[in-house]
Length: 166
Image (cartoon, rainbow, N blue to C red; front, top):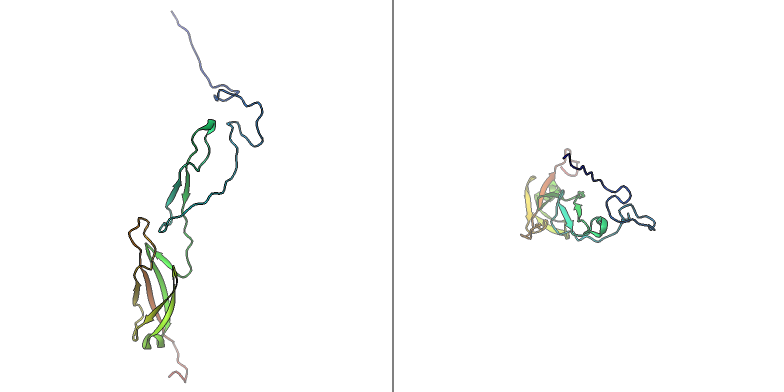
């Protein structure tokens, strides 16, 4: 009439694994896993930006009991370049030229992703002018072309002229 009461718990010896390891190799924990570090090669696609995550299937932690290994998540952190600044897929470069070069025109080399690029500064160029190098920016992560490189012209005007310059 009162019935029977049954209580179940996890085995305290094997923690519910159903088996015991008699001779455990060195470095193996209670679940049968070995803690170790592994070096892998990761291909970072062009156009990734700060905060994006890449996933490598099956490269994460092993699962106890011979299960499927987890995924490795890679968080992207950008290191800022001292000359080129990123603006989306565009790159921005501040070019400082002298008053004489701006007035008479010149040819200068500027840094770019693929190396140095020579550009022509037209005579009479004003400070604040922006030159655009189409396709010289960063590739789009989705493969829709490349950004541009924007060159901001800054003309340095001397505060005092020497007797030879005036």
